[in-house]
Length: 112
Image (cartoon, rainbow, N blue to C red; front, side):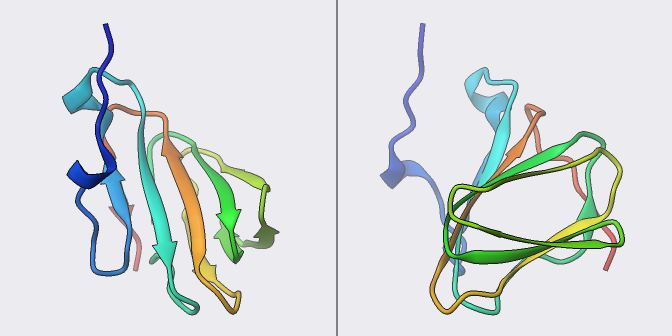
């Protein structure tokens, strides 16, 4: 058995981000597909599970706990559970980022 969700059926925010929660489709994983302009990013938040990011295009600065990490195309960054984190597009073009949540629903506590 399988399910396919067509791109046209996924809702995007005004900034271009898609939010996918796997619970509705029988999946144990959820994600954000970010497609942001320079200077855009997330606010500080945390999850009760690790979050994994895959940078598909652009340049990004992650703040994970008290550390700042810069990453580019093809890099993978993982933040541990319960660690506050955020990201910012520091490039000159669009940032495409896959934010993987190892949970059938996205559980997020905003810190800012």
